[in-house]
Amino acid sequence: MAKVAFLGLGVMGYPMAGHLAKAGHEVRVFNRTTVKAEAWAEAHGGGFGATPKEAVEGADFVMCCVGNDDDLRQVCLGEDGAYAGMSSDTIFVDHTTVSAKVTAELYAEGQAKGISFVDAPVSGGQAGAENGVLSIMCGGAHASYDAAEPIMQAYGRSIKRLGESGAGQLTKMVNQICIAGVVQGLSEGLHFAEKAGLDGRAVVDVIAGGAAGSWQMSNRYETMIDDEFDHGFAVDWMRKDLGICLDTADEVGASLPLTALVDQFYKDVQKLGGSRWDTSSLIKRLRAMG
Image 1: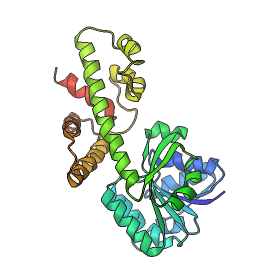
Image 2 (image 1 turned 180 degrees about the vertical axis):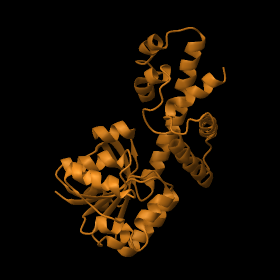
Image 3 (image 1 turned 90 degrees about the vertical axis):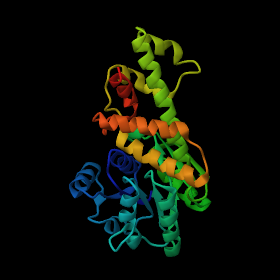
Image 4 (image 1 turned 180 degrees about the horizontal axis):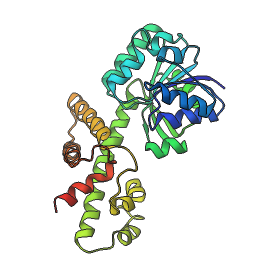
């Protein structure tokens, strides 16, 4: 078993850190809201640090899942940051969905300090984190990935190295691009069924096993029909991710017309007051249009 630090105890990080403790690892956590770190430590029998530096001291692995580029920089850098407390043989695994730019920046900073950095964004949402069945897309050196992969097995079902540093984040962008189009298509299909007077549940029962089927259809169609949107990844976070996708597309010369369109549709959802609704709330926009 390993000594592991976990930085960031949001809806994803809290259960992920819990799975590490259940797997028998010695876990110390950090969260900007210290009371949450204290509560986690009490619930799971682990420790916590008042700063990232304090939390990571003596750790073999440091896992991180925070909000965005700036959050990640703040956790890693500075006199109280994780890098200040890590030894040269420690491996930093970043589960945050961030830009390839900040990944390159922190990878290089880690290299200068002798710290290994693996970018490892996750997919599967809160339910995947709670059930320990996340998909994890990794980039970084082979040796670093090979060492960290058994630790990630505590909360990951599908874990794969896609290439050198940054490949994990680029793969997560592909994931979000694909989700955007699928959710929009499902929203339009269910909206059409409603307008045409069809029983949406009966329709999905027929088509879900065919070419139209998807994870989104299987897991979100009922809540979409019932107008319930508190079951997963929030619109605000999706817009953050799609912004990263679109910026990176400009850099690499990729064309993402559908992604750009769906991003604007999510902006409309935000205007409807749906910033914290889950991503399947695209159908709310269609219903609001009449």
